[in-house]
Image (cartoon, rainbow over all chains, first blue to last red; front, top):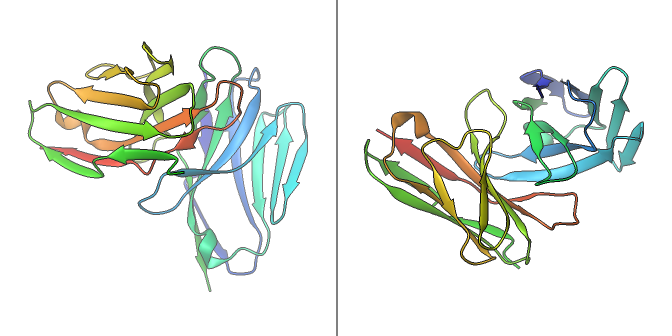
Length: 112
Length: 112
């Protein structure tokens, strides 16, 4: 079946880079997403990558996809305290109702 | 443009009570979804709708019913609430041809 795994917690120092990792099982996915959830709020789409791409960069965010190993990562450069949140990896499938399978989320804590 | 809104934001129910959660979107999206979020788990799909008047079961539909009488609204009903339904409920919507699901701020439900 479909499964998406993430480590649950990451702590980084302000100004350092953060790397959040995700692995998934179903290689038929079309898009892979990173969502951010701040306390008490809904999920906000940060970025996504099409499954035939290896990398996508968007300002401080870099997404790397290793389709062979079914591994997705999100790198946040120059991490700030405002980046503290839960980050969800999600795997999307085209067709039908465009199913999304979410990981459990990685809580990123940024300390001075 | 309010995006996706959810009412109520918080609710406490006693076991056996019923309630309806309302989701509204003003983006003219065809697809709408109801998820639940539990600690240590990713979002799980309860029900979804691909258009006005249509609904379908997701991953965890038991104990819930939904209706989509108007395109902009998607209602989630609990006929007889159980403590296992204590969760945070998120609604999302999406264009049929788009890649992004837009999420509401969530409803925190506690069943005693």
